[in-house]
Image (tube, rainbow, N blue to C red; front, side, top):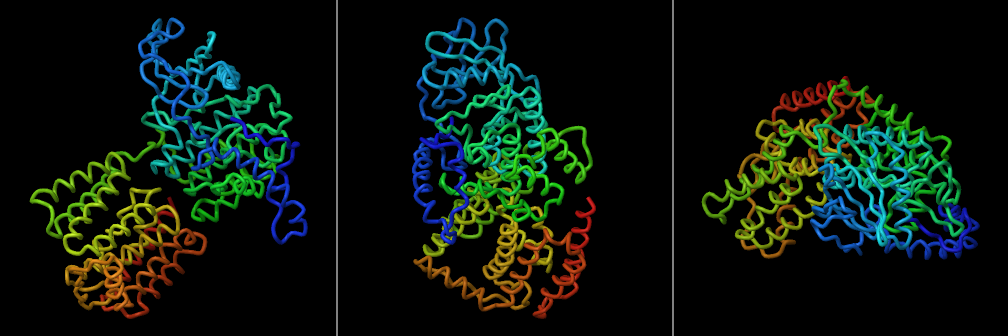
Length: 584
């Protein structure tokens, strides 16, 4: 699909990011910006709201009867997907017995010419990272392209499922760059690189395929029309395209920089929910990746920032970017013969599964509601769900206590349900760590809550680490209150929580808050440890010793009743752990 700015000369978008209420020419450019905004807004129906990618048409215009031969040789087996330009089927090539992905596009409109361009580009490329086209055929109504069939999922799907960590993101980006470098060497510019056009093959390691060359520019031709067509998807289009300038291989490098920034940071650097605001952000350029991930190595941050340079001449070539990404990754870890797994191996999923099972089992058994045997069954079900899909397991585990709490107090059940939904939303991008707060009650009996910042170092994002550690300390206090035990850091027994017969969630939340606020030392220690978790990315630059001293001073400042030796040991262990990570 092409973005069309009607009746606009090349460069009409040049004023996007440079008008503001404070600028002297704001009023002069406002009307042009408004007209442009209307033109861009008309495209909203053709773009999805998630990342500015095209929204698929629910039903294809084409219906293919399964088991009926197409072109006398391809037997459709099952549909793989559909959109406004046609449909894709898993088919069997009867003469060879090979399974293929058969793309079927109606001949009317631009879809057919785009499909033929796509096949022409794919046929010229012979690279492991580019999907191969076996055949192109036509009849009176349709264009057919037979591609190699590769089971897998798109990078967009993997990002939504939280299955792309830093190592995977670097490897995927490096492979994309290698595929693009091959295409650029054959004078082909993709012009629509984005996560939904990157296929991650089902395999023991990471293997990508670059899909959909339908908007490709070949042999130096320029297909930008006089009407101002801007090929590609807005969220991944470089600023020079929005300015109406010609662009080549650097446009693909920009798109790789955008998706790499997105994968490492956890959110898109430009997407603002509206097309006009997104275009303005693109023209202004991306903020440095260091603002979102200051813990990343400086060479990697510099690479991503260069790929997102507003000046296309400052961007590295795809080949140089791919080589540099691999070098950056190999400096951080020992080179292995096999590629890393796309998703966590089974041992890596055991801890989240065990946490989900433990939370569900305890939540079902702590209060009377479920029949005998159900707590064990719910624990097993939550653990199994987490092994299959981390988000499903987290959602199930968090939902288990709702009914038992309702049996005790309707207000408490409602308050917990709202909190659980918010927590699920916070943990959506990294569901494996969604039950990290359970670490608090596990460490509290041994006076080792000061280990929480170290335990949280693998959580993605400073805000996430801060909230999780703060919640872990408060959860330890709540568990002590429910059990009538000693509160962490205070040494005093927690007052009992009397929430029976409370009907209002506000009343229940107020009672819990008053219980916690009555022990300000607990809140103070929670803030100190949460701040330490937020500061982890800066420890390498500013030194581990100052971090340890500040953490020890902050933790011991109120004179907690628990033995000081336990805090000192925990902070020393944290320092050693951070030092070991810095050396790795």
